[in-house]
Length: 362
Image 1 (cartoon, rainbow, N blue to C red):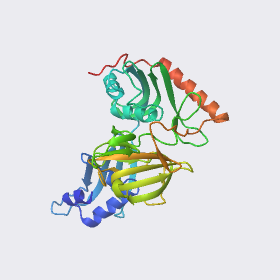
Image 2 (image 1 turned 180 degrees about the vertical axis):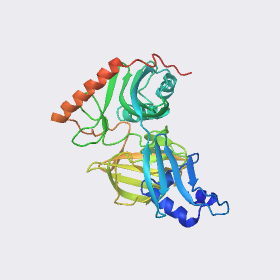
Image 3 (image 1 turned 90 degrees about the vertical axis):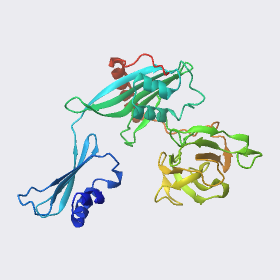
Image 4 (image 1 turned 30 degrees about the vertical axis):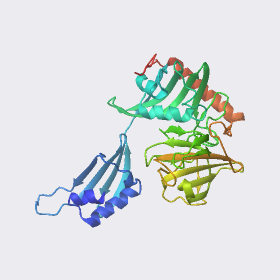
């Protein structure tokens, strides 16, 4: 940001004041290549006078502008301006004929919505083993437009369903008034979120399962006490559940390694990492889904991947077979509140037109 302003002839002290004001409401490190930034200077009839910065507008998102303006005193103040958006809903359903991801794209679902839907179902579904051709999916999600009718962004998945081998799984988005923590719930009020995630990484492929295998480096058969997920170097790794980091550092053939203790029974381990999230250390508390580090190939490894273990009472167990500890279940008034919200969602679904009937991926 400072370099950009310097290239436009802005003095270093002025640039520092403007950036300091912006940082009060926006992390300038989030600016990415291609972000539009408008810079305005004070008008003057004296062409020999030095340029005097008046205003900076960062188009931070499709519906958000971050503005820094010079005050009469010469200092800068910042504020957010959000576009007025109108919300609508979209209902898409289809038949899986290759993978859920490809079929959902063919049906017209945006990538971000597909990823969101896959994530919320990932606690209940093993996508590599349980999804078959002919299975059904349905997604009901938000969409936002400006006052000109232009699509600005897609919102949250409100409802999703998967019918796998005739068994239907329904999930509803709901925010209990007592916790204000938005979750996805089954129709009985049980949260979809489990205490631990089976796959704490997005977009990865399972390259090695749990059990005896021929070690790719040592050459002999050896027990593989975890799962390997192949992914590009630098791919974010998430904490599989809430917990405390007990180990962080190099650990022999594991390379860069993290061990998280979740409760008195379960811990999870992450190995061969390229690096750790900044500020993370032994004793740090993490929440499920927090980024803890990045895929690498440190230690005894043939290429970038995550080695992931679930430990029960200190012993490794097969993450694909362990019965995951359940999350929480709504009761009493909160259950009644959820049932009313789910009824309203079903009513909206019944009125919404279908965007797609059948999805086929080539």
